[in-house]
Length: 95
Image (tube, rainbow, N blue to C red; front, side, top):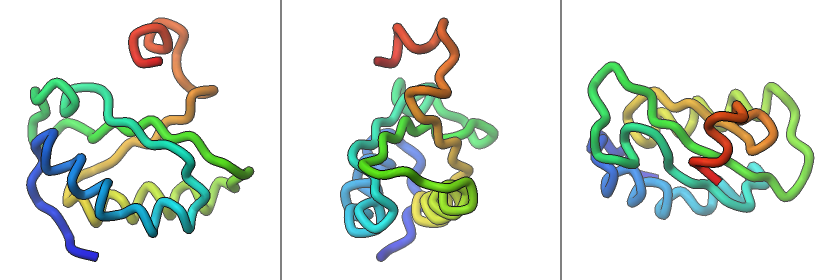
């Protein structure tokens, strides 16, 4: 899998599409980009915010491995969030 260093919305979405095998291996049912990069307003110090839904239970270590691996592939720091972990004020805007 190629490492992407483009941190535009389109670059991130392309990296996610190309990472489908990795996402499947971790049991990811769905992944969505939100936050500043989704609005094409991301900066060098911004996280790439990804909402992930799993089709099976996943442990903390596996969750962190996925987060790190996606960060390596995208070429930027990634923050993974599950729907259950969303803050109420964000939930309505994201979901």
